[in-house]
Amino acid sequence: MGLNQSFNGSALNVVLVGQDANGKQVKILARGSNFTYTRRFSYSNPDELNTTHVQETNLGREELGTGRIAVVFTLNNNDALPSADTIRSLKEFTILEITGDDHPLNDSTKADPNVVMNAFIGARIVGESSGSAVNQTKMIDVEVIFRRKLSGAMWKAQQADAVYPAN
Image (tube, rainbow, N blue to C red):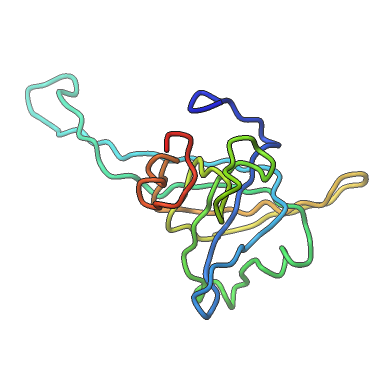
C-alpha cells in the first residue's frame, strides 16, 4: 500500500471541521454518504489585431470551487445547517476528505490517525436540498463552495503531524 493505492468510497470519510464560539474545533455534519466537487481555473487570451487565432493563453487564478455532500438526515445534521437568520454569522470551515477509521493506511499512534487525501479550505454552506421516498433513507444534499483545494501532500506540508504515506 502506498501512493498508488486505490480507494473505495466506503473506505473514505468526509469531515467538515469548523470552530465553535470558543475557537474549539468541531465537526459540523456527520454520516456522509457521497461527496463530489468541481474546481476550475480562469484562462484568458489577449485580443490582438491581425490574428485569426488565439496566439497565447494566460493562466489565471483558481475560481471558487463547488461541492455537494450527501449526508444522512438526522435531527443533528438538520439543526447544524444554516438558516436565513444564521448564514451570515457562520465562519468559513475546512472540508477534509480522509480515509475511513479502519483503513490500513491510518497511523494509530497519532491523535488524528486518518490519512488526509484532500483538504478544501475556506468552505461555506450555500444551499441544501432533500427529499424522501418509501423504502429509502432520507438524505440531505449540502451544497458548498470553497476557496482552495490542497492535495494530501500539500496538507501534510502545512500540518506537521498529519498522516500521509509519503512521510
